[in-house]
Length: 178
Image 1 (cartoon, rainbow, N blue to C red):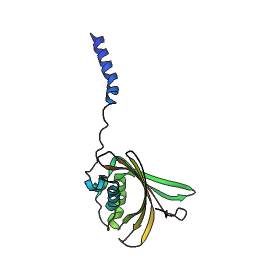
Image 2: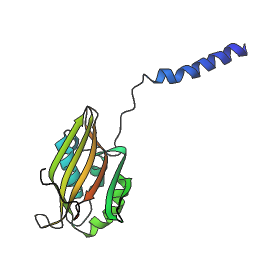
Image 3: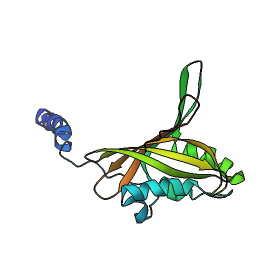
Image 4: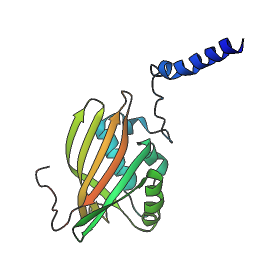
């Protein structure tokens, strides 16, 4: 009696992985519900990304910001090259909100896209987005660089899965053909 029961249990557990391979993956669920206009199109999500971090000194809408990203998305900025070695500091969207939020509370920050190169394959999109940073809306440019934004379209909306960025430098001028 125990042997047939043990055999049935072994077969049940052995078959579970094979059966679960046909199950669809769980849908990504944002930590915060996005504004539909922010995530319906590639242009919409890119505009929302720049808009949500830009503004006069004061708070940002971090719920809107988080709603643009896949859960687990990473962000990272490349620091200055020292001794011929570039550095990249990675973190989560929550890390970015925490670290940048304090700066934004005290300082105006406006970032705008000034050029873009896009590569798409199936649901995957890579955007190299040239940007300019200003301290006063419409004022002089204080920094420029390139955001490398990786996006995923699940057929219902756009998601940002990662962003890395690097500022321009004397040895790394901004592209002029974008």
